[in-house]
Length: 380
Image 1 (spheres, helix red, strand yellow):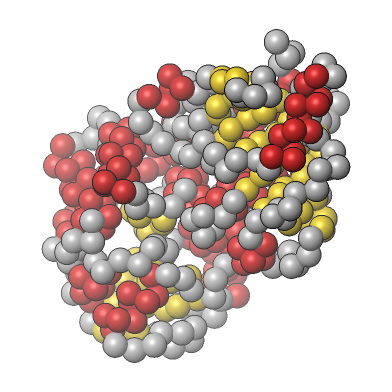
Image 2 (cartoon, rainbow, N blue to C red):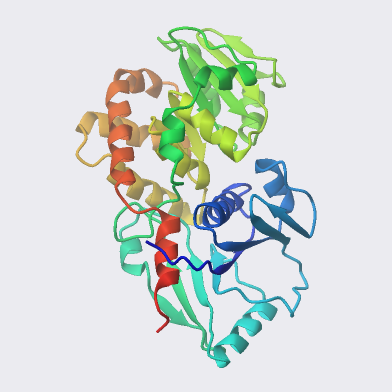
């Protein structure tokens, strides 16, 4: 149980990974406000990114959306901004100096806010050791707590709304496809494809063209479309499908957060990217392939393997090797065509592995509730 007295929260978000950063922050802000009745203010430097995933948003300095106060994060941050009781610095974005000084004044007055650095998601083992660690700011003396999302009970968990699973289980697939003007033929695999630009997409499409099972691929408008158009030689657009061999590929409009969740629910396989869609694919409980955000010196591949170690623990070695190689080829832009028949041969194992993983995750406390627990603890 959490305190009945709502607290004020400021969440600071800089948009780096297109929709991943704002996607996580917006989901968190809405959950805190609507499920836990907290007073939430979201500061974001790129409102256009928010508008794409939440069309009710407007390019305004100040607005109220879904019970969340949304503010444009200005370059010259107002020094008279009221400090919240809980301050979340998302993904080490560095809160403004003027706000930091205001926090320091509160500390000197004996009412320092809870300062949380919400870190990027990782399955690496060191995350468990670092989750909950604190550091003292050298000039203000303010204490910052490092909060790591993760996949085990020793981490901060994952964002999961209270009714997410029941909403998924009761969702009407046919109505959703009808709203998109999509007709799925019988005995076809429905696949969603959301990824960064990737030269490997050509060989993936070739694998689908020659697939032993018919493939119906839905591509939300985004970066991967450039790579697809380059391979097909045509400019794909909604209501202009690409049909060749056993592949039917259709571009659909960029989706809101809720619509994208629903797309993941209805598809048989989901190709996802970054952090937000990666987590939502796991709540869909369907087979998925993750395109991780690229980092220098291939550091992202270490994170990729750390997650695969957890996902594939206890699985048949041949199946596990097939999934690992497929994910690596996708993330290293290597040929994908020859992997498709093998994936289909292991499809039932892939489905069961993702269901088992989903079930394991649902047994752990979600991220928002763990933040509330941290906020309810007496200050030391």
